Length: 494
Image (cartoon, rainbow, N blue to C red; front, side, top):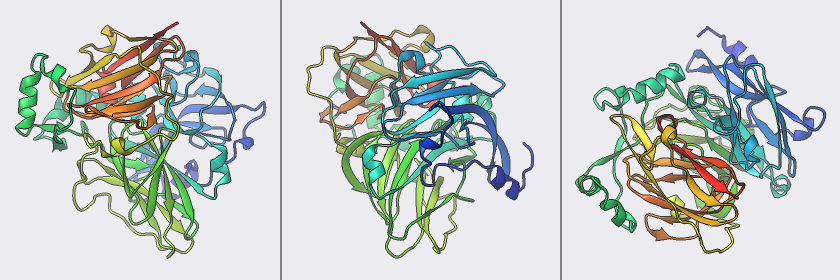
């Protein structure tokens, strides 16, 4: 780490996406974008830190596309190490998905071109190497809809990260080596398990070795685990509440807040305070508006929240509350002349668990649900693992020993995720969107997503239509879990 003056830091900081979006027409010639995977310097609690990032030709984080614009992008690796970048939530051809099982790594100095039809909504891009994602190699990817351009709303992007001054490799070594699992040594943020009512799918699980005993222990007060690692800071657009981003908005104005949980291992509540707000999209897909002031988000997920600014012209903090702890981050929406409040990075009391709280998921309804079809494939995917030894698997197998989940292109699949562990798992499927159709045995027609949080000792079923014949990644988006084996392939055949 090197010292960096405050003035120098501000001058060097790339403008983040919390200002009105820059039209993509300002891009380079030949109707193509450029992206560079590189290092950059940010300031965290008064200290300079070198992290990674994905910057456009103007040095800004990520990309923003106009309605109907193709994702035509040249990616250059300016890092000293191999990398590979995944376009999370987009559905490119498998050869452009940016994953190491089917795409070659991008070597230092090498460039690669991508060209595919972009899905509209709030997305993001990130390295598919766990330690690089921990090192902040991620950025927003916003594709606007015509109706979003036409409506009178200011767009604000909030990209969340968990940050450590330790190297990403040291973070992984700490949690996988077991030292992070000592409840006496660090705050491991455990919480009581939610009630087991409505878990109609548990019968089959109870017949498996050890499951009846685990269920009995749970009923006796066994706790679920929330956080594997205590990071040094939690960032919103690269900043903490010690020096938050202040976004200038209109008094009484209307805002569309695009929240991206780019954290490696952290789930949050998004708190809009006293402002009137409603959730209008998840993972880039519109939902029937859900009013509220506190919304759940897990790693890999995105939320679009419409906010009505107070008419009194007061500033409005938008907070991201780390589950199970007092830690928080966020940004501030402030009309001209509004006093900007000074906020502590700790709440007065611990925040409740996001993991296991399926209230929001059960309430969501897709604006455009999947067409009604009978499923011809119904695979069950078992999510397993424990804290000591720190090992996480799918169907009892790690990546090196994976047994792919199989389907045929075009068929309707209903995939059940059965979580047999005491941690929630945000499960992400590449190359597809799916509709949540069942949670803990309760059947409903829920949101269309690409990443769903599966509660501890619970189940979630998703419906999807199998796409391009290819091996698509299927994994937990918690980087510690992914790194130790909770990843497989959804193998679609012709």
